[in-house]
Image (cartoon, rainbow, N blue to C red; front, side, top):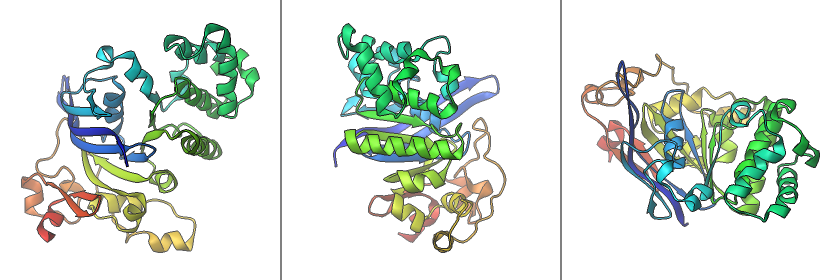
Length: 320
């Protein structure tokens, strides 16, 4: 497969009155063309900060982000327009990402004009095509976002991302503000569009249940670091990191088959610590049922246990 995105030792730290927040602290992941990579973690794990570095909202503190071999680690103000066109984002809350004072026509026409996708006299036709593409009535061009339901707003946000014909779309928890039926509709829409146009998705979420049916590969993030990366099928069948097993064992199941596949219950201990006061050694060790003295004193290495299955844990380094 052809690699479209590579993140190498990415760090993004913020200075606050309480100290330095290590929101992202040495992340290494990659994404291939036409692939969906699920980046999963609890609130505060740093996954959205990774997304904002990729799209250029933040510039990296250190490390590198490569898009098709080009280093794009700097903030968006220094990125060429062509790169801003190639990488789009759909935010978590469509109610705040769409201008409530603009008609849907204006919202979708703006990227078409900025990037000169079609001539001015073809913009309205293209806006209608985009609405049809995301399964919305063309009459919506005369509506404001406040007149739409949450799922309809998110579909407009998806249409806006599609307007410039991107190669890659970052999905920052795009279904978390939606009810279950609308979640399914938006996810099915994204999968259909990916199948038709070959988009690459970096899918940010805290919902492993969604990832089971969407992702090709899954990366688990905790306190600014990646603790496990694996192909989706292997990830759910043989989770290795204690944190991964804790997350999967807490995912609700609805069938006996899913119950059999679920790993043995791992008790959830404590809460994710503040990124201002990250525990020494492995950041997960205060919550880990398998922790040893080494876990508290030494930082683990990422180990490839199986082909394309990586784990950030002292236990697997010892077992090699």
